[in-house]
Length: 117
Ligand SMILES: Nc1nc2c(c(=O)[nH]1)N=C([C@H](O)[C@@H](O)CO)CN2
Image 1 (spheres, rainbow, N blue to C red):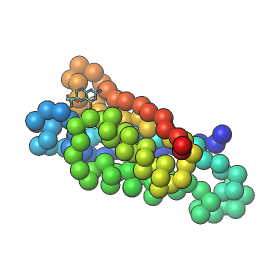
Image 2: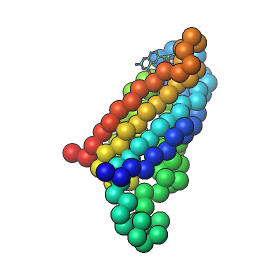
Image 3: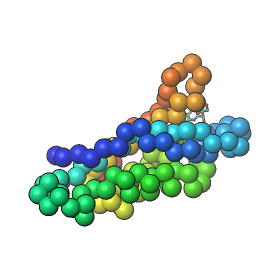
């Protein structure tokens, strides 16, 4: 099946379980992969037939930055739910990286895949 993807999308979030993480934002980076049939857009050349990755990216940043969360698992789950419900994709994979979390690691993160029921 066809895919639309966004790589390395940055959002600055209050996220973490430690006190200091509630007082300053940290960058999170998202790789998003959406299943999307591109047959119509490939014929019509019209944005209305495409999954608009610009609008989608802005919606994800807004959601992530709007309130604090403890776990990046929660962030990933809410981003997946947003994309499934607001953008009507059949399946989405959300990868979240939190590069400032573990000093000895270049990055850490989680990846989930969710589908429409
Ligand atoms: N699986 C997870 N493990 C941890 C998380 C998390 O969100 N998911 N968060 C933390 C702390 O907030 C950490 O990132 C601070 O360095 C620890 N483990």
